[in-house]
Amino acid sequence: MNTGKINVSVENIFPLIKKFLYSDHEIFLRELISNATDATLKLKHLASIGEAKVEYGNPLIEVKIDKDNKKLHIIDQGLGMTAEEVEKYINQIAFSGAEEFLDKYKDSAKDSGIIGHFGLGFYSAFMVAQKVEIITKSYKDEPAAHWICDGSPEFSLTANDKQDRGTEIILHIAEDSEEFLEEFKIRELLTKYNKFMPISIKFGTKQEALPKPEDAPEDYKTEYIEVDNIINNPNPAWTKQPTELKDEDYKSFYRELYPMQFEDPLFNIHLNVDYPFNLTGILYFPKLSQDLQVQKDKIQLYQNQVFVTDNVDGIVPEFLGMLRGVIDSPDIPLNVSRSYLQADGNVKKISNYITKKVSDKLKSLFKENREDFEKKWHDIKIVLEYGMLSEPKFYEKAGEFVLYPTVDDKYYTLDELKETIKDNQTDKDGKLVLLYASNKDAQHSYIEIAKEKGYQVVLLDSPIVSHLIQKLEQDNDKMTFARVDADHIDKLIAKDDAQISKLSDEEKDKLKTIIEENISKEKYVIQLEALGSEEAPFYLTQPEFMRRMKEMSQTGGGMFGMGNFPEMYHLTVNTNSPLATSILNVSDATLRESKIKQALDLARIAQGLLKGEDLTNFVKRNFQLMQESEN
Image (cartoon, rainbow, N blue to C red; front, side):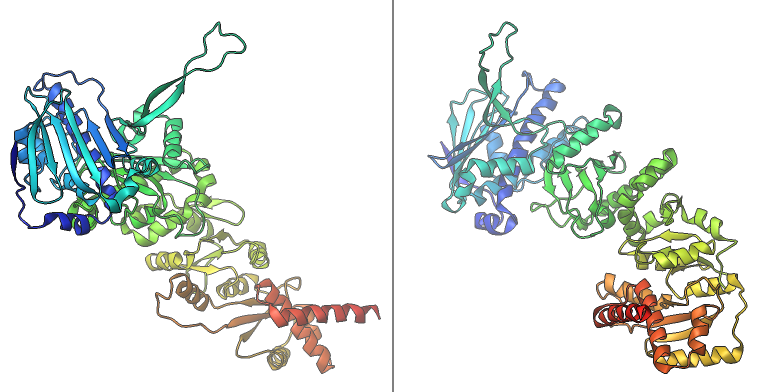
């Protein structure tokens, strides 16, 4: 028997491991199964190059609970260790066996899938165990070894009669961690962290029905046998080449990742790069709501098929955080607690690559089947618009596939749209004016006015539209956006109509004075325009700049440091309307006031502004007018 002290550079390392080194105690199982996987993959590699004279077979990793004795077993059929190797790899904390192996076999083992990069992984066992045993036999022709440590620097190392190759880790679970003796808890952890490990993982058994014999009688009862319960998929879709997969394979894998998601994804992007870093994965575009927050934390990050986190900030560009899928890269720097991912230069390169890959895929989908891309536009636009705002490299490419649909369901790129309106929608400064609606129903009357004039109105109804159009205008100084109910449309309509007013200048001045006497000057700026006699006598528009700044301050969570904006509207009075003449000529002051209020309230309804007491009074006034007309 050999006894001694573990070679550590920090005294009382075990309390540090238990309390500080790992942020979440449950990941001990992930670390131990990662080690077991490494041992198995190492053996596979050595056997493949003829250095290990053994039959590799179909090894698996087994996890067993012994609740009565408060023990948890992790058993592998990998290359095992000699007593000398136990001394070297277990008793010298932070000496990584995986790194030494990769260094020795760096040319032939680079694709072997070895997971471990830290010698501390094994010691995560002491977060939940009061004592840990290792019973291990090497693939080499040497006796098995039995190592025991009770959580102090003291250990014992003796020979053992184990005959089969591999390693068994026995955790004597501490009183404060007995939840890890529950089957449901271990199953939950295996499913969370090890669902796609490259070696099959057995956890208990399950019943499997035997095939029904061809000559079975009518009253035949199905027979069952006990079989190993393999809880993982060692060959997930992202580990395969895109040429090996069909659309149904991608959809099937999506359902495996998200079993409670009943809708199929719109499309997927397969990531596969081996230079200048290694990265594989599959990203899915699901149907998205307008809520930017609830969609996040759906992408799973793996390192060599070991689950790390679903918080991929810093690795996946922020705007793609609303997608779903898997990213797997051995080149992502992961410290022992699997955090602080942003500390390495590779991370930014990976993020840029993902942005480029997504951009290229979107461009390809747009070019190959524009009609299908247009059908999916409203389900993916929030991601792409957010990407244009937050990711400069994505913005550079977005002009080739980002669409601007009209209220009549025609789809244009920005360049196509500018070409369409260039002869018809310019203001007095020669700028192209892109009219847009943010709500087809609420702005219906304004949309109709614009359409009657032959203007195109695009539908931009995402919650970040104010920020987006601000950015687009900054990069296109000969173009401006104006919501269809904004004051900018007044200039277009007035210019194009070229109507002659039926009222003289003196009559117009009098009409303006009368209206100003009957409405609030603090809320409304009166402007008279000669429009067609069939058009609305009164309509309201809001200054585009003020409305946009107000929206941006609201959607930006106060990011612009602006307070509440005053409610200010332009009231355009059509001097050619019969109502304008009627207001001008009526002698009864009460009737004149009633006409003005009625017309103003109708204009406010068109803007969705008539509420509360004003709406109640409007309804009463209409009923009263109906009764008076009957009399």
